[in-house]
Amino acid sequence: MLRLAVLVSGGGTNLQAIIDGIADHTITNAELAVVISNNRNAYALKRAEASGVEALCIAPKEYPDREAFHQALLQALNQRAIDLIVLAGYLVVIPALLIRRYQNRIINIHPSLIPSFCGTGYYGLKVHEGALARGVKLTGATVHFVDEGTDTGPILLQKAVEVKADDTPQSLQQRVMEEAEWKLLPQAIDLIANGRVRVEGHHAVIEPQTNERSRQMCQEETK
Image 1 (tube, rainbow, N blue to C red):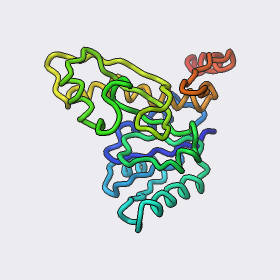
Image 2: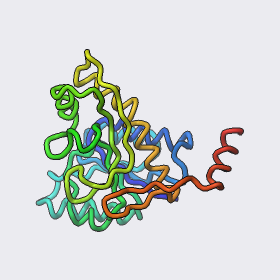
Image 3: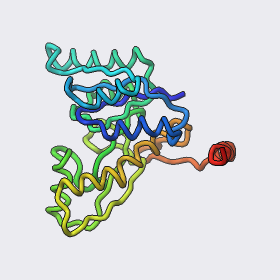
């Protein structure tokens, strides 16, 4: 059973997609062990508590320096024997020591089709503002593994979303979440939890579904 930690800074809509995915078996062979936020007022923490999941606030401002904060975060993850870290709107830079400790075991959801509208400065509504300013016809979301760059790790999944002529950054953000983010993140976790993903260099490779897994899914669908 894959033990998940979800790191989030805000409302936690992607966290809710994970909680719902585990509940309805869209995500299999995984359990949500802890939700961690840098923001004590994040609604994501309330979502976790409402689902019976441990909710922690580990905030940089509550530590004397960044090194102490990084060590506290790493200790919390190690103590809970976390297998996979999921960044779901986490607005804190992940330290190199954490990336090395959890190499190829940290994934992030980004609201664009990487390599477009990503990297330093592209987060939240800024991503969608950039897409609209450029006049692209398609945008979307990407799940990627986290390395020491910004949005530069191996890409695992992507899904395109149409940009409409009357879109605002807010309407585009909502549609990207509904049509891409909330679908991709549970799918990515399920793939990893069932041993179907390997990282080769800068590429994430998805293994074909085994016959046994196909049989189990058919049985579940007929129940």
